[in-house]
Length: 357
Ligand code: ADP
Ligand code: MN
Ligand code: MN
Ligand code: MN
Ligand code: MN
Image 1 (cartoon, protein in one colour):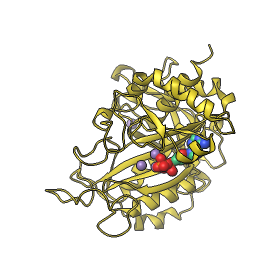
Image 2 (image 1 turned 180 degrees about the vertical axis):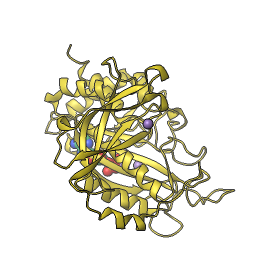
Image 3 (image 1 turned 30 degrees about the horizontal axis):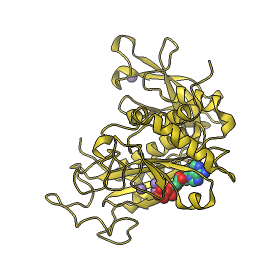
């Protein structure tokens, strides 16, 4: 479908209108494709905690999440944020998907992740995710790339400044501000190695908050790019060949790793991660084999490796942590399209075991 920019200037006029004691709640969920969907409803104006927000539903047969003859999927609110689009007191509501029979929907990866986080909460797990993405034009070509041909080789684009080096900084900066307004724990942003590719980081977040904040940050990015007529691709290898892929580097630490003597716990975790390399790769995103080639700052998909400051390894210990002897590790394997609930969940399971029965 062709993209079209919204007339954001005209919208300003209506944003100022009195809402007469009502607010708009935009419910957000994750569909069968790993995209976000949303729909809005009117609620009485007040400050809502998640428990006070009504459970809602949608037609799961239209999203590939339920059969047509039993199509209702329930939306259970799990996190609430002020809306950077309609502004406070209007809200965004992140919701989990549940089936009519009381079981979690097949694509509800949050439920299992939350149980793992709860079971192992004493370790105070922190995560920081680096979301890389590529901005595409209406022909699904990376923005600013010649229609028939390629830009000059990689080199000037990473953290680039200036025309011909980066594109659509307006989307990047609008997204940064929108995250801050919503209270999403965004911690930075930078232009990436491949032209039209960007990154932002979310974290550190503790436990289940990591997945929640990353999903809302993705929703905000797609929503802002929609207004400006661009498409966001989280494909891990949008352009084959000598162009960097896109990942979701996952930084991880526990309370034990973050203090003096922590390296022992970091190395212990790495040993456990090594033993379950295949299981991790299985949930670290689709088409990740096209990205994890052992080139372009990646480790090969069928080999587990680790090292201090090594960007060609599966796991990297940041130089500063290596020098201090404590801190965190970076799992460089997850693809940009991976589900953060599945990543953070399996890291907990591998390091500390399955959930309590
Ligand atoms: P890189 O050098 O790999 O590009 P970035 O600066 O992009 O690193 O991202 C680092 C990420 O690590 C950030 O999201 C940050 O929040 C996270 N982080 C920092 N300290 C910790 C920690 N102790 N535990 C977990 N994550 C952390
Ligand atoms: Mn209808
Ligand atoms: Mn980074
Ligand atoms: Mn990066
Ligand atoms: Mn990184």
